[in-house]
Length: 293
Ligand code: ATP
Image (cartoon, rainbow, N blue to C red; front, side):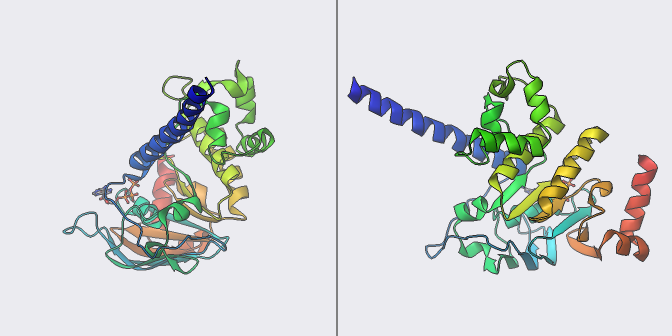
């Protein structure tokens, strides 16, 4: 009996890992459109993200050889600061995040974290060091508690609760008939876009990465949810290096630096007030957005 029991137990662990590895892959495919196989170099070392400084140095990249998407991008996110990227659809904003995670390799130039070229480190360690709040969060068919705990599998209930509270989703969870044990995902309770994003934020809070990538949802959230999310992110980003891929300009006015992208290049950069004064593309986008609100 014991003999039968042990392998089954082990199988359970393997299944759980397999299940979540698949879910991870799904996440990657769905949110970051990963396709090619990137392999660790034999000499790859573990990256231990300490300061969390990001640097893109003269980066050229195309998904296909005949079409360059990023045409010589250079910028830096100093440790602890927030940089937001804006620009029209297709400008290459999300591609920057994909290169930071090394889902693709650059054609020329370098992507560096704390001075380490991402091609020289183990991918697992790279992705462990970066938290992401994606546009569309994948939920596992499991409890809402597990879905948050996923950010740190050994987190205590207390830590999970605190993260949910910071992400402003605790009250919602406690209002559900089955509370923390409510099943969510495809076969459970469907969460709204804003609720899912708050689950992702809670995961990121638990993970406490030195670097956070926030890929803002294109679909707009109601303004109360939006403001709640913004407040939470502001809190997190105060101590974390944050790269925001922004679709709504109103959410990034406080960023230390805003990069305006167009057709694979950075055409303007500066703080919100500097860019407004410059009276260029950012100002034009801002005026257009005000008109459409
Ligand atoms: P949006 O605001 O719509 O999210 P974006 O600025 O984030 O746009 P990217 O997703 O970075 O834009 O895409 C930049 C360009 O790269 C687009 O022209 C897009 O069609 C192309 N592209 C994106 N992903 C792939 C892919 N996996 N294979 C080929 N081309 C891609």
